[in-house]
Length: 517
Image (cartoon, rainbow, N blue to C red; front, side, top):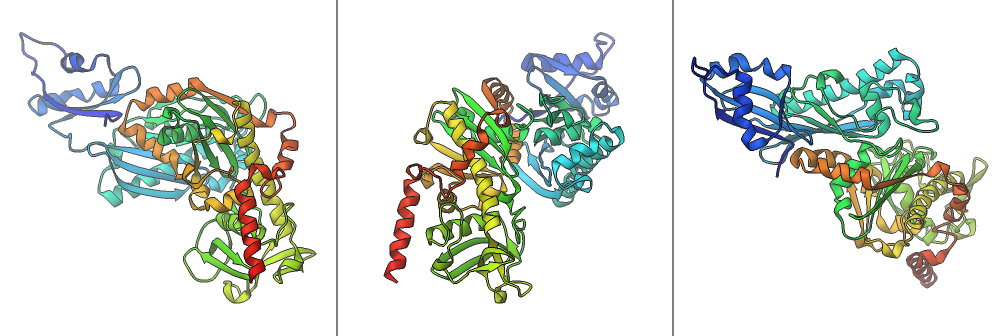
């Protein structure tokens, strides 16, 4: 473990008439033989006196590696090496998560999450972009909201751990390109229209006070490759080790947007595009986020429906993982055809409701308000359009690199959605490629994990540079015929069933089981 920062304590000779060198020179001359290039700014220089003299020459210095040189960030009297912490943060549009990391032990001392205060200016990123467009005061509000969220999380961690988080050596933060622009106080509108060029793609190390944060050390912001390929994805590649892999892997962060990277240590090809809020239950009637009362898993045998509800108790709606299960089960049971149309003759739970066909997946006795929960054909169509966009991104990327799914040695699914989704259900509906279960990993919040990785291993700075240099980026929105290509992927699991032999086998087995009953 070679953390991004170092804390060293040593005895420095006090000045004498025979050796009246400056305090600054004494410190740098002592450190330079072991650390080479060193930099000390005025803020740190002001700390030298009376720190050196007050402790009889014993001091502790904090140094941060910034890629080309060690930067001294603090000088303290005495030995303070036992206190050595850093902060890792994932700046999401909805929620923000932060960890307090013990850089001496390599462990997480505390973790906290909060909703992003920017939600006051719009639940979705696009609303916030237009709110801040060409309006310095609105842009300042968005910046302050992001900084205040981070500041509140620092207070939460301090309360939980008893550690003064303001004294941390550094913060490493990952977020998508838009969120980083907002934190920096930059107008994000250029990301939204051609030629989609960020104002700053790789801001690097920024002084915390410039962001409105009370933190001793600087803030490192993970760089972006493009407008929709942000630092959260680059951080994810560091966390999963994909860019160090010998075999070809896929990294997919699925949400309202889908960010995808294919490659290994020899090459990286990336693309991003709109997937759709349906993956998070956002546009489904009765859909909800994965919270208490949400149906998270579904299984069906004939007309018997089993539900798993978050927090137990009665159901209030259905979240993304439950939707994937429900569609997969309906298809395997023969209640749903490959076009996403419900078959009334296959189940007594299929009825005409509000002018369209719907499936009753929860009776009134199992719901919080006593009313049945229905899944409508229009809900199914929206979800299939969303999964078609996700699948087409994967297929096009593989075609770009001249390979098919048989070449994939691993498929990493990042984000909260991928954490709870069942492999078999995702393959059944065609959201995932037809890969064996052992090849699919739900890797969780890799944006946060990558931030922590860099805090604990400074060599990742060099790896990040290599990732950006090797990565080729595809703008999906600029691909001719992309929408037409999605049409085949809108079928369950795909219009070309040869791509999904497992699903064909699973459906045949389920149908044989129904015939025996």
